[in-house]
Image 1 (cartoon, helix red, strand yellow):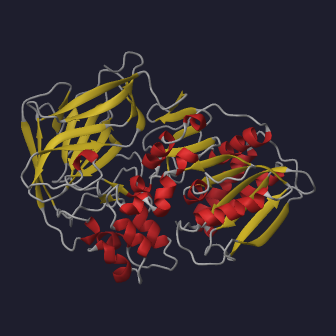
Image 2: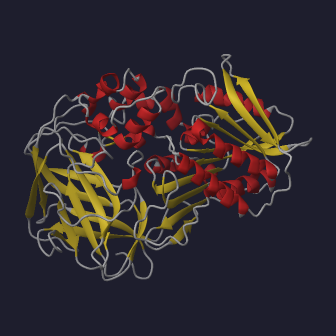
Image 3: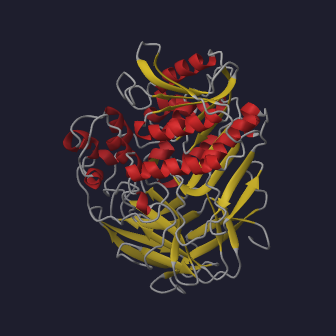
Length: 570
């Protein structure tokens, strides 16, 4: 992602501020800095930058690999602050970026190049124990070598990434435009001046590279034409190798995430796939931030956020590489709305209960239908969905180019568009702490051969202001989360199941719950054309009439997993 000078300056200030509060004070000032063109196994030379204290001895050393030369000043500042505290710090640019030779092609060379760089560092006489650090793509460069680490690597600190790439790319057949289309445009290896939103709307989307971007990007075409979880593209080759990596890890890990980071769903799957012995010494922390560690809970206080990621990373490496500590495994979750942290030894929540609200036609609030704690009489809600006029994303989990709409944001009123159906509960009589995946179920029918249904769950404060908690989306072609397309007969009522990414959220007494249902969430997700088949090959779109059924024995509800404390839960 390209950064403005203001953003670069702000990042440098953040790094300086956190190191100024580091409990380990600098004791070295005469830092040795070296740049070299390190040859990979095929002879391509990769620009490698080394910071270390002067003199002999063996120094704990942090290594990382990046494809983002715009961040060079931040890497240099970080490396210098580590070296001032007795560490070596080595960073290398991926081939074709930042002065490294070769051709830039995402992902494919990182395993061999990373292994070559680590083996070289492992052989340096001044390098003691090593740790691997990386966030986002830099974390990917760590994951791809996690099973072939040389002996000196004792731990890895990998944030804002998950190895299950399909989870980060798709939700039930719908492509995450705002992450991967924007990333492709920024990292195509050539400047692309085409309008981003026009690119997202282009049909057939598989041809957007040649028609709007000035040339083929075969790797992007594979992304947009492989919607099935079981497609060979995600399960063989590079991505197949990567998704098998967690089971092969043998060193303690620090995994960091944000509740509103686009890698969260994949990162949770990644943690769950780790061996028990590794989990026993791994920390998985999730905070109230987006991909760039920005606090994104509008209207909320964040006095206890503790977003000192730079300092947290240093302390992790200092504890393991310098003090020789073996950390105890733990899950640490920031509770949104409570401005507090919940810590437990593993993923299990033994005090878990449930809270369910049923969709109903009556007892709504304002211009809305209702949510009740018991099922009510049968009813329907209808709306028309036009793919050429999709509901815009505002409040989301999976954005990057449209970052101003990321996070828990204040929402417009109920039924704010003709294609948005809102359900609102009565005032809560007690506090509830949600921890886990919120689920939505209802019966629906469409006049289209395939279509989408999206849900947004909000907390409506006593003041009347509504704030997004979680969104989710599915399609009739991928209903039931099977991972494979299935046929749908227009006009047939079928169950719609929307399971949202995990969240920790405190619902307050006196607040109401609001559920919005529509058929689009653009550009967080591609706008469904209302035609069956691979979305990126569709050449046209059509309107569809949508019907939601609820009540009278119909499974139509929103369910919250809650912690049983202070009388909460069932």
